[in-house]
Length: 188
Image (cartoon, rainbow, N blue to C red; front, side, top):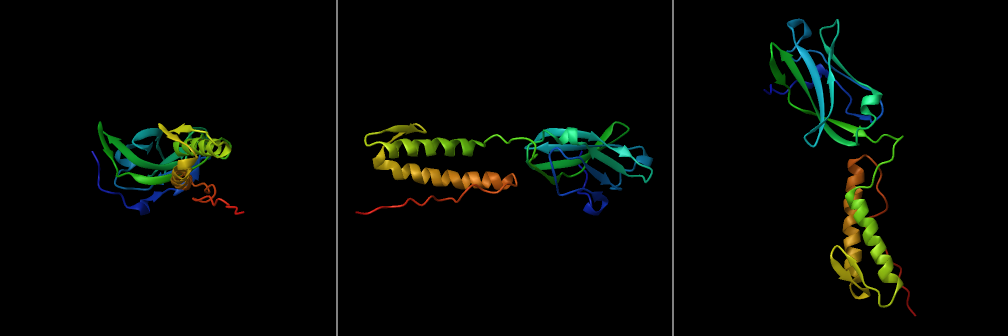
């Protein structure tokens, strides 16, 4: 069962942390005290899938502390996570409203390309092939392209670049280049 939203002043938590780093989240009260017989768990989820579950340790100050170790966070993918606290007493579980936590990329690992980055690389290859020859035709996304409709490929590339930039911003990374590529035109 979900309880009412918790007052954020009783929680000590970072807004973000880097995957592979340890961090601590503490809840000071919220109506669920260790001295009253409650146990606690922190659940970290992304897109509805649980990525990490940590038992709370009850301290002498009648609070729960959740330690996310560097080993536990090393493989977290970067992005926006929700976390919630669940409390258990006498076989009755109560969960608080989820809160937001951002995980930054682990600098010691490589990120795999997003779907949009893969599509962008494929459309750039198609543009290069069409541009290189006179009677060259390429198939991209189930459609055939020639020099006659090269502008359609370039427009598609520009739209994909915007999506790639949005993906990178969501991951907390800088974007790659601009959304439009300016083609130099020569005249005789």
